Image (cartoon, rainbow, N blue to C red; front, side, top):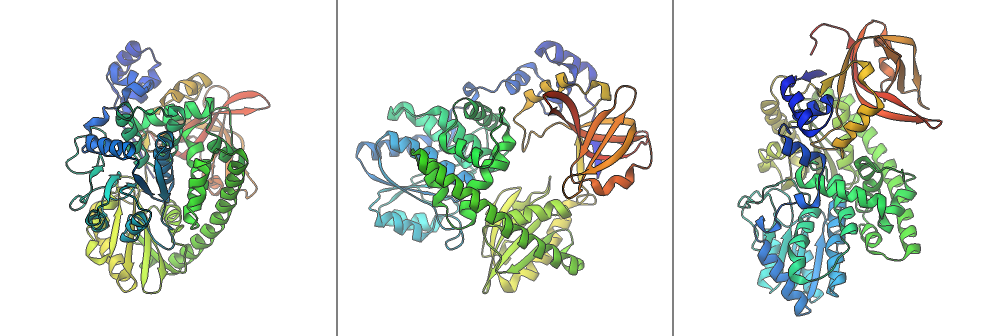
Length: 568
């Protein structure tokens, strides 16, 4: 692992600390994140709804607002077609909030991931026509659905696309395409999740439609969909998640509160990680197991008994998903280890018969973590394969897969994740070409993990007060990770220990001059033998640990090595 640290200009940090009224370490962190001007630093530290951009800067926004307004006035039948993941189901829930308040006539639908696959298809259009709809919304999909939308138009069905996926070819012939990533869209922030784009649609139209909605609930749903889709938590996404978490603490949506309860995780202070690791996997489990309507029903229900029952259903599905995921992961690892030359090059492309199409994406993420390579996992069914891909930091997966497009039947996605369909007979060729493309893009050190370091601290500086100030940078996630610090020339107090039921975690106490500090290295027990040499340098994140009502500083280790001058 390469430790990478770029020092910050001390005079600049001191000036920013004075002008913004923050500590010097926090000023360093703000500058590292690109907020060196006092105005931008204050805005980042205090995200407000007023910081949201004018929604009418988005291409086609006026057309979309006017078309829905006409549908509401004339009592048209509306068909809402959304993706089966958390971004899709929260997008449906946000739009449904508006349609319910407007007394609209509408139906919602999500395709079955295991049987129908991703995106708006001709079959989806047929469902809307059968329902006698005259307006169809395609949520978290549609940018690449030109053929289906052309068919809808030929049958007199207007389509409004609300999406965020990259445009590859011509825009579909929809009545309106709301997508900040369409090539001609001037919208200043390109990284909204689909639920964020739906939120902006309501933001634009409510003054025109004159319909009151529960903004506190909508912020919570937007926060969940945004975090779940792993988009950068900066700019508008930071506002949506920060405000959504506040309302989730103060006035939780009943469905989200029920999910937190069944996940046994309703802490006093909610963070983005609770959305990512407790709520999102349970909502996602419905789509992955081929029952997307369960999550949709949960978010749309107002009956407390039904909400609890559906939340428990999702919890059981998530448990089943984890079991299937572990089985596929173990099969994939066995296949890779049995033929490392074939499967472990610049990339991993591994396929398996009968693997669940809804779960291979999570398996790809786990393999990427284990082997640190762009990874594609393909579920085979007959002569066809359905794959999900996950990237490593700094590698543009969408670009790489695009360069292999002639070998694929279909693909889509973004820099960090993608999906594809491929004929079984072309997998070996795809593996070879994708490996070659990745080698060109990665360069010499592309497969060596890089750990960016935000600052250097003496252990005595790692205080609860500093941790509380660092928390002002939250919510943490993609594009705004929790800060990583380095401390040097430390000695070990006492004997390192392994802990946990599986004895897979490392625990030790380190010091330089003052009192020892407790350090925990999750999944690092195998490195206990590396602690023979002293002193050591460590990189870590800061955490407040509460034990018997006592709060203390805990260091969460990311890496360590024997002290070497100027190692970074």
